[in-house]
Length: 216
Image (cartoon, rainbow, N blue to C red):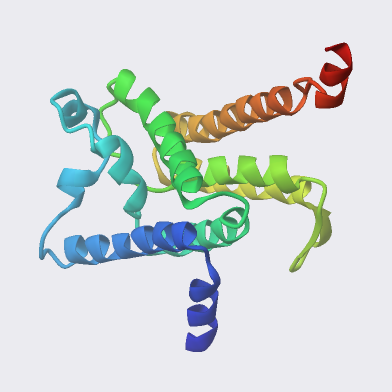
């Protein structure tokens, strides 16, 4: 089992590997807080009041802190699974940029509304990665254990619903869920804009050198 995890981790592109490692190390912060050794949550969790006072790093760092053991295991599984797929499609810079965009987009509603809550977890990032999986690989087929063969689009919708239900009942419900969904919406809008730019760039007419010579 140890070799399986080692081989999987070593097979990831560098950007995906660093992203998974950054979230995996967040569990150490949870253990330290649970054991009353030190509490990084006081400095890194998303809380609007400190953000308005200048602690802007919180709109990013909250995504790398787990809400507990179960949250860490589930989130790490989906994060590793999704970046193992998308990390081969994007460069390390674009993968990190996409995930950070989703993380900030998930934090903004909470900060702008100045909600009196503290938020941790990678849900905004995961919703955005699910959106990317849907758009890029949506027509492919896969097999989910206990369910059978599905398209990637069907699997994404199912996984998103399950994550949304878990998030709703475990992390503040109606206050946190819409904000984290903003991460997925931001990812979707980014991919739509990116696709239109690439399409416009590829459809630009290219002047033929042979025709130009004939005109001369």
